Image (cartoon, rainbow, N blue to C red; front, side, top):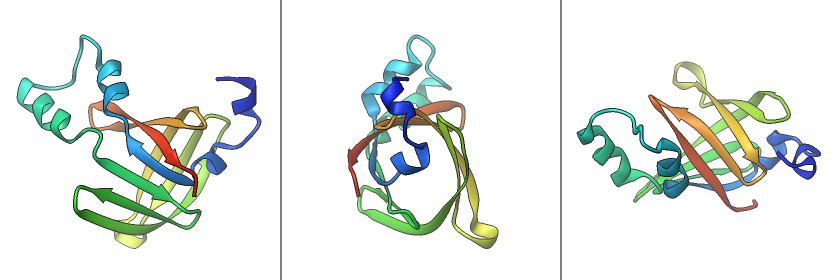
Amino acid sequence: MSTIAMQASPSSWLIGRWQSDRERTLREWGDSPPGSADFQRLIQRDLGKLVITYDGHASTTAFEETSTSSPYQVLWHSKESVFLITGSGEEAFGTLLHFQSPTVYWVHTGRFIEFFSKVTVA
């Protein structure tokens, strides 16, 4: 990671609109894609369609024609990662985001990782 990227906090990089990065995710799989051939076809069909917008208080997730909003909070961050709690009560869940730069992060999604690239700053 560059020295410039290290000067700000990943929690401030989060604000904006992010889209699943299909090409980067598939490139990361390399010669060892996760799961069965059927699983790979299913995942590849949907990669690149998910868009998440963070505004500092709520995240809005859009996939094809469906959109949902939930409150979130940054529970913890380091110089390269952010741990978010999204939702509330029994519906809350945690997500650890690993930043490669202020405009690229990846998350574990089951048995593989998925990359997201920043589309716009909120």
